[in-house]
Image 1 (tube, rainbow, N blue to C red):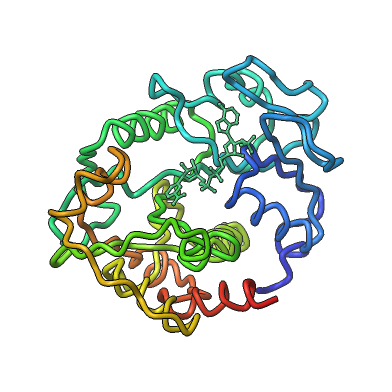
Image 2 (cartoon, rainbow, N blue to C red; image 1 turned 180 degrees about the vertical axis):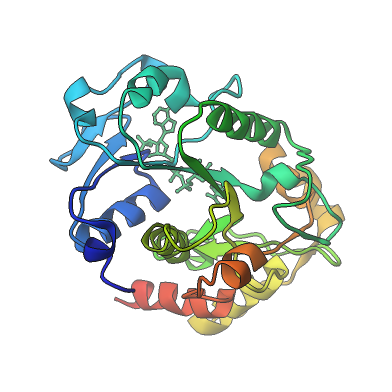
Length: 294
Ligand SMILES: NC(=O)c1ccc[n+]([C@@H]2O[C@H](COP(=O)([O-])OP(=O)(O)OC[C@H]3O[C@@H](n4cnc5c(N)ncnc54)[C@H](OP(=O)(O)O)[C@@H]3O)[C@@H](O)[C@H]2O)c1
């Protein structure tokens, strides 16, 4: 990665709203690159760079937090009504700032089911699930806000500490077989690195408001599970046919199996020239495996 600090100038201040799995990875990376990054969470913690933001309890950050903020990344999902919690609580505050860039982490769920076909940013969203309809509504709210927003549509996120290895370890795994079903994925490091790449090259690259960040190789879940069992030197349990398993699945787990699509990364990786760190699940899981072996 080229020198981020010099390529962005040094007077940048990032707010990361929602410091969960992806937000935390992003914050740690840009701090390592020499940037100020403040992060929100819903409850108090020991991190001196963290502040409280909880839209459900109307806990709004002190105005001082926003002083000099140039970049915002929101990693917060829609509220129960399908509105964006950040815009609902903080829009007027954000509008007063001289923001250079706002990133919003969305989901590829907005594309709905394509029966395994590829989808790209030019395809019309067709969300099947209620939660994806809410997400699409949040995307629309961000665009309508007039803020300099860039929306990143993400498939299943995994990385060190949150991968199939942990699911196997906690015995939460179900080995389900559904013919021709694939899922797209992204390693958390590629979310961060792709965003940093786009920020570093902002002046030379055409600006796209909506960008998928996905790896090169959508594949079946069983392939991924089998790979992890092999790495662990364990025998994978016998797969259960989806038709037999579905009644035991929670509604949310069932809903994931209702959508079958391959998410294209051509805009990010071909048109814009980002080079994935982990181009497929094997590369990404090797990195996760190093983490569990530590
Ligand atoms: N996980 C996936 O596979 C996946 C796939 C595609 C897209 N996405 C979406 O991409 C984004 C990042 O994903 P992630 O898995 O990294 O998220 P995550 O770990 O679940 O973190 C979500 C963050 O949002 C904060 N938050 C939630 N509701 C809030 C509210 N009402 N007010 C203030 N803060 C709130 C949480 O606060 P606390 O830290 O206090 O809990 C947390 O920091 C999310 O919007 C997620 O829905 C996720």
